[in-house]
Length: 464
Image (cartoon, rainbow, N blue to C red; front, side):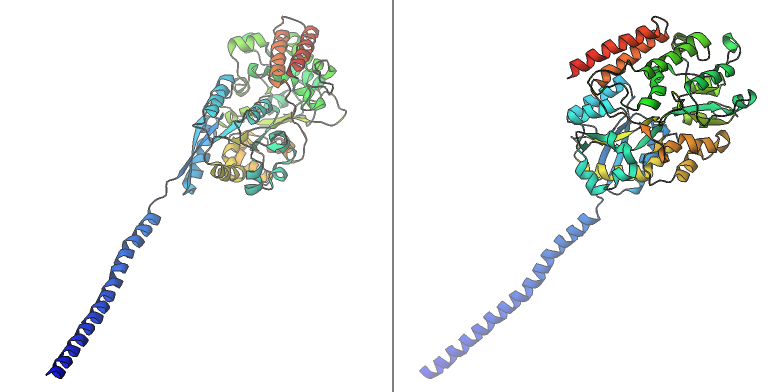
């Protein structure tokens, strides 16, 4: 009996153990699908996350060029080609008020990722006050051949040995001339000339009187500091500074340059008097394209020459260099530096901004070229630039002089680039104020130069 009970107990125990193992096995079987089920939503979530559109980084780019003169086409092309970055262009007027607005926004830390600077003194100020980021490392990473690609004008973007911007475009300061008027007066288009030759040609091209008068040349009143340009060809970009720390306003070339424009406006009548230019608000594009002036030194009217809807004309425009002081020594082309693009030190996306900048430098800048701005990158062939700039308006330009003069200095000439910045804003004000007083007839040239020298020395003394 007892033996039978023990056998039954053993059998029951074996049955229980069998059920336990079966249960464990079933539990393990059920556990795998549960774990698989738990993983599937996570996997699907990751897949959905990767498939969801990534929010684009937005860069705000401030520049002084009207949106319709290249910037809109530029950012539109870039935005359409990008999955991660979108650029918005904001235009500011490149004058004192416009630059103050930009500087105020930069200091606020909001609303600016990239911005354009057009003068050396403003670039230095923005570098030293912390508005512009030191781009040296970014350039080494994304644009290591920058200095080779733009050549010596890269020095313009350096402050205290560090790079604070990319030289995106360059200026080619030269004269635009009406070929028809030159031919009608049997005057050969000069490939080089002195200030005396320029003055004589302007006199020959001047015709008529009163409202019917045609001037041999025209100078825009907003650029009356340009009377210095002939002196740049001889003295170079730092022409206002002496090594001893004083101003260079007593250099003979500076007096000669001011005397030239004084004589042409006040004696010869071959350029409008400054008072008339200001009173009538005469502009170079209107004077030149309505054939009221045979030539002008405002090469930036390039985009207006192409706009025959607004300025209908059929004459051909040629280009000649700025007149030199004399035929001796090396000729230095006024200009060089153009649009310098910097990254705001407050930008949250400096790497993305740099990626856009490199694209702009090698490709996007061609949209600006269509409206007259010359790409600084030497990696873009002259022929390509010429083709883009003249497209659709080949009949309006003399291609030979365009490539030799307008583009020529970029591909072989030497620029008079200003690197000195001591009291630069003050000296620029002195040049404008005293130059205008002479050209308005309030004082003579000798008095103007004496005033410049006195005020310039004082400004530099106070700047130390």
